[in-house]
Amino acid sequence: MLTSISKIQRHTAGLSYEDLMQDERTLDAIVHNLQIIGEATKQIPDSLRSKYPQIQWKAIAGMRDIIAHAYFSINTRIVWNVIQQELKPLKDCIEQLQQNENLDP
Image 1: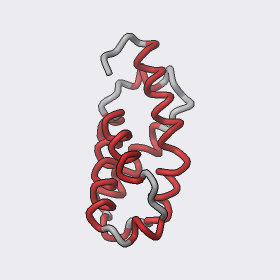
Image 2: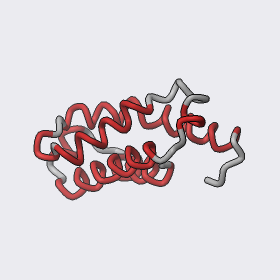
Image 3: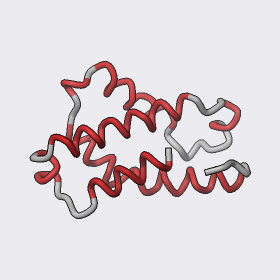
């Protein structure tokens, strides 16, 4: 998850929403990495997820499902808002989870 978050952050550094909409390759890479994050979320055991209710596990997995099954109707504004508002807090929480649970990054 952290690798995909970092890739998205690198891909979008210095970009505006308008820039992203003009860059199909970057948008595709971002959407792909969001899908990876969602899929990874589904692999985390419920026992571990329940210890970290501040992470919106179902919403993350749900976004993956939307990307996978409704790719052509993805709302790019929502994707942009996730990038701008949700990725950094998610990254911080996942790093804390890994530290607390003694998990390898």
